[in-house]
Structures are given as structure tokens and as C-alpha cells.
Length: 371
Image (cartoon, rainbow, N blue to C red; front, side, top):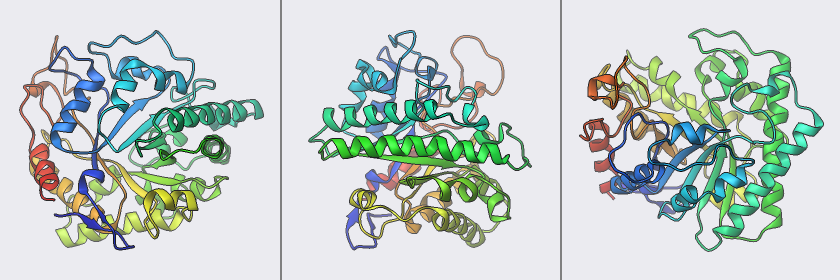
């Protein structure tokens, strides 16, 4: 697989398309601060795209090895100014995707917006993201970097349940999420208008029950995304639902299912604004894959097939980024003491607890080297 030609004829390196998530791993390998240990490992892989977590005080629990965090952060901007994060942003990545929540309002712990967003909460969110955007534009001017603020999987958040056949969200939850996302988008747009910079800051919503929406259910992609005002910059697909659906399909049918899912998202995504076009390029799709992967211990053969199908199909379709879940496994397979061994964790990893590279690492390394 070589560089992908965009619709306007330009070439885009796969290093700037295929990336990885680094959050909440259960093990480490060095005395270096954990956030940047992982980043250095991804540099070794050869990607220019990384996704990290900034969700209330999840920084302290998601990056806990050899870190010196404060007890709490008062704002998104304060997180961005932290020495560990500044070290990360000084690394040679081109794109940083940040799972981010305002500190001035309740966040990922309870998704307060399901019961509505007050005017005060709206303004707090606008202000916090305006300031965070201004900080990035001012501090990293000259790098040409792209920063993307996104949320955690929106359909689980709006439903307040994780189950195979969940109910539809309430009208109050749909309206609340729409207003909450509008506040984030408005704040980012205000920040962009206030600072002239070659850095680009975007805002995306993560959707994860797309297959259900395709069957007519009200989900974030069809019930929320079209109503956000100002319009969202991008939509991120946490693509576990289609990877489950294609498990028993032949490759051709699986490719069709993945393509149909991406098409459905694109049909409900807003038209890219001139600002978004300036980042993505004319005619480019404002959709990316925010999560994909498989438990390679549970079924390595299907896992690698799923990873290959999703990667190659999404690149061919034109997804702007693909973010693999993830660098080090964050899910235990059972109880263990001290540092986990390979059998103690689920197989969502590029690097196993014993330091061996997984087959996913080998696959992505070959893709990224084939430039």
C-alpha cells in the first residue's frame, strides 16, 4: 500500500493517515514518563498521528507510570500547558487527537448534558474551548500541526448504557448533546477567529452505533450530528460495530459493509466549511476512524483479518485518519498481581507486556514502510 492520492490529485503519506491511541495501558517498559514513553514507541513504528486522553482527571489515571501530575487541572488549557503534554507536543507528530472534556462543567463521569445544558454551562464550555484553541494556535505557531478535540464514544454516552441492543436515546438527551457539542464547536471557532496561525484546530464528534442507525434507530450520527450549530468540523467513527457485523462475511461482503457504514456517516456529516477544507484539502471527506482493532488473544486470525480489511478499505474510501486501539493493552483478562504478563491482558495492543511486538505492529510497520 503506497501513498493515497486525494480527490484533488495530491499525495498524502500514510504516516499522516494511520495512527494509534495511547491511553490507560496496564504496563510500561522504562523509567520515562508514561505519556512520552508511549509516544516514543509510536515514533519507532513510523506514524505521525497519535490520540491521547484528556478527560477531567483521567490524565492522572490513564498515564500513571513515572508521572508527576498535579492533583487536578482547572481547565483544558492548564492540561495543555503541563510539562508532560508540552513534551509530547514538541515531538515530531503532525496530528494530535485529544479526547477532551471541559473542567468548568461536569464531564465524562456523568454526561450532565443528558438532562439539558444551562446557559451558564454553555458559556463555560465556549470559553474553555476558545481559550484552549487560542493557546494551541499561539504556542505552536510555525509547526503546521493539526489538533483535533473529540469526545468519547457518543452513542454510549447519550444512552447511558453499554449493551448489544440498547434503547433509543430520549429527546432530552438528544437535545442536550446537540447543545453541548454546539458549545464546544462555537468555542473552537471563536479561538480560530482570534489568532492567526499555521496551526489548525478541529472539533469532531465520535459516533459508535452507526450500524444501528442504518437500520433506522435514532443514534448520534443521524439524530445529533445534523443539528449541531455551528456545524461540526468532523465525525469520528469508533468502528467496533461493523467489525462485529463482518466477522462471518467473506472479504468482498465485508468491504461493502465497511464502505456502506462510512458512506452513511458521510451522508449525515455536514459539508466541510472553508476552514475544514483548508485543513483536509478540497473535496476531502471530513470523516475519520477514531477507533478500530480486535482482541488478538481472543481470535488472532480474525483480528488480523479485521484490522487489514478496515485499514485497507478505509484508506481506499478516503478516511482522513485511522486510529488503532491501541499501543499497550488497557484491559485485564483476569486478576493479576503487580505487573501483568501476556496472559493477564486482552489482546488490544501493538506491544505485549513482555515487550514482543504483536502481529498488528508487524502489519502496520509494513504498511508504513511501503511508502
